[in-house]
Image (tube, rainbow, N blue to C red):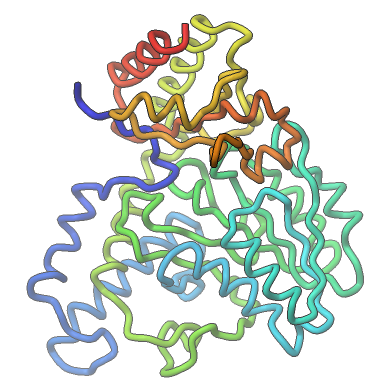
Length: 372
């Protein structure tokens, strides 16, 4: 049986169009974009074009985009660049309990430097209540950081509503959009964000490249000091190869926004599971406000890791970890207060642009054969 890949939230394959665009920078266009001679010109032009392509997808100016090594660095730059010492001594940050570790760990680091961090809760669907954000604001609040869409359950947060609160209090807003860019609209002015993180390998670009949108009025302290690359905000010779990959991926993504065909397959998978297992399967996350490619389900009373282990040709992710016979729920499911006997059976199926109905049918068939 052919292998089936339903783990696109973890990483996507490189789109063939993206790979083709990158190839010249592996073979001939090797110059340093910052040099002033003939060998640098193709790399410099490609870097500029890639920045335009990313900016076009986000609806911002090219100079508001800086390239990073990925979503984690983008999040770290947004948080540490705004709230490190000396500002960190009195800075207050608001974030949510279900952020990616690339946000939570920088927050913990900053708290060790003296910053105060408030982790607002989520409801049973994984949604942040904007009123909880409002109540958490203090006179020292410098930054609100809430992810656009959760990587595990797919819940989409009310970022525009949170942005209204941030503007009312003169607070900057950052959103980790690693999971949403290329799937749903991430126009920065519609969201109202001041900073937004992009991860290339969630977007059919290669690993090792990402971007951070920084609104013109926002000043950040660099994480990496050196020469004046990326407008002085990130030192280090730029990789035209990787930037071209991200830029081309952003251009390719434009007609895929909304992913209607993928959403239909996601809903078909849920219908198959609901028909086969009835009350023995539970959907985690918000029913409507969620990524079009993502379905997180729990097989009640089962262990998700054991189910996936018995399906070696299907790539998906589990929401629980099993060590020495003990099952531990993910922090996201814990924050959502999912009951242990439900959460331990959680599996995330994240579909991609080229997932087929035959693959969805086969996954449902395997689960029915194993668990019925």
